[in-house]
Length: 453
RNA sequence: GGCGGCGUGGCCGAGUGGCUUAGGCAAGGGCCUGCAAAGCCCUGUACAUGAGUUCGAUUCUCAUCGCCGCCUCCA
Image 1 (tube, chains in turn green, cyan):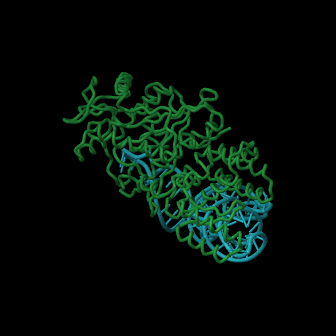
Image 2 (cartoon, rainbow, N blue to C red):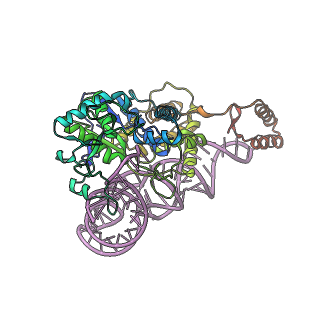
Image 3 (spheres, chains in turn orange, purple):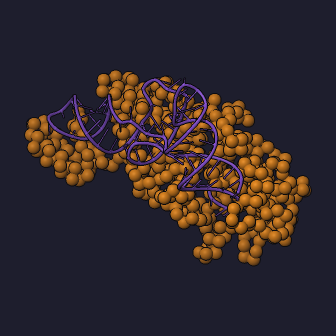
C-alpha cells in the first residue's frame, strides 16, 4: 500500500484511488512568460517519477497538467517586449516542451490551457456569485473567504492569523474588497488588455479559477492527487480548493507538495528574486540524467541545493551504472525479486526516492560481484531488476550518451592491441598515452582495447 | 507577530530508541592487471549546543544558538 504525505492533513495517508486501479492526478503547470529555471526542472522530474512509479506499480494513471496562457505577467512581458501575448505564450510554451523532452519526462496525458476554458470559468464564477460566495466590484469579481468555514486548511492557519499575517509587510488588498484576503476570480480588462466577454465586464479570469475548473472538468469531483511546489500551497492551492468547495464539489483527496530548489547560498531560487539558474543552461552543460538522479537523491519534500560538484558526483555515479548495463548487455532475465521488493517498499513509503536510488547502487555492486565470480545468471537477474527500477525512476541506462570512436583512435587502439600481443609494453604504453592525450580512457578487456570518454 | 521546516562523517544525502547503524562522490589499503583502467573486498568510529526522560538517544521532550520557508506573484 502506497502511503503519501498529504499537505492538507499534515500526515501520511494511504492512497485509496477513487476508482480502484486508476489514479487521477492534477499538477499545476507553468505560466509561460519566461524561461524555466532549475526549480521547474525539479517540479517536472518529481511528478514524472510519481507518475512512472504509479504506473510501474500497475495503476492506470491519468495525468493532467495545465498551461497558464493568460495572466498578468504574460501581459507585462508582451508590453515590455513589444510582442502580442500570443507570441509570448507560443515562444515560452514551445521552450517548455523542449525542456520536458530533454529532461526525459513524459508529457501529461492532457494539457488544458486556461484560454480554452474561459466559458466554463465564467459559468463557474456566476454560480459562486449565485451561491453568495463571490461578489462583483468595479474592477472584477472576488471570492469571499469569509464564506468558507475552513479557509486556511492548506495553509494550516486560521483565517484570523492569515489576515493578520505578513509581519512588517504591508497587507495587500484593494479597498473595495470585503476582506484583504479575498482574491480575484475575474479581472475587468483595462484598455488594450486581452479580454473575453462576461456578465460583469469584459476581462480575464483570475489565476486560481482555471485550475479549479479544469481539474474538476477533466478529472471530476474528489480526484486523487493534486501536486505542485511548496510555494503554491498558499495561496494558490488554498484558493483552488476554496473555489471548489464553495461550488459544492469535493476537491483533491491528497495534496502533494515538493520542496524548493535552493540557489547557491541557501536562498530559495525564484524568478522574482533574480537568483535563478536556467534549466536550459544546466541541461546544456550536464547529462540531463545527472539532474534527474540528483533530484531523486534528495527527498521530494526537502529543499535541495544544486551545485556543480553535486552534478559532477551524480554524473560519475551514472557512469558506473552505465558500465554495468553495457557489460551485461541485453538480457531477458527475470528481474531479481528481492531487489524489486525492496525498491517497492521504499517507494511506497511516501516516495522515498533517496533510499530507492540506493538500491540501484547496491544492485550494481552485487551484479558486478556476481560477474567476478562468473555467476552470469545472477548478474543478469540483478541487472534486469536494476533496469526495471531505473525505468520507474525515468532513468535510461547504458551507452546512450557514448561518443562514437573516431577512425584515428580506433587505429591507435588496434596498434596497441598488436603491441600488447607482442608484449611490447613500452610501445603499448606510448599508444595509451597518445590516446589519453586525445581524451580517451583505456580499458583492457578480453576483446581488446576498449575506449571511452 | 502567526504557522512550518532544517542543522548527520572530507562533500552530498537517507535513516533509526540499543541489532551488521543507507547510498553516492572523494580519500587510503588490498585483490586483479605486464603496468593501468574497470570491477570487487576492506577502512573512516558522523549525527549543532545544553539539560531532561530512559537500563540506554543521533533518534523522544524542553531550552539555546544558527539557517531557511510560508503568511504577497513565483515550481
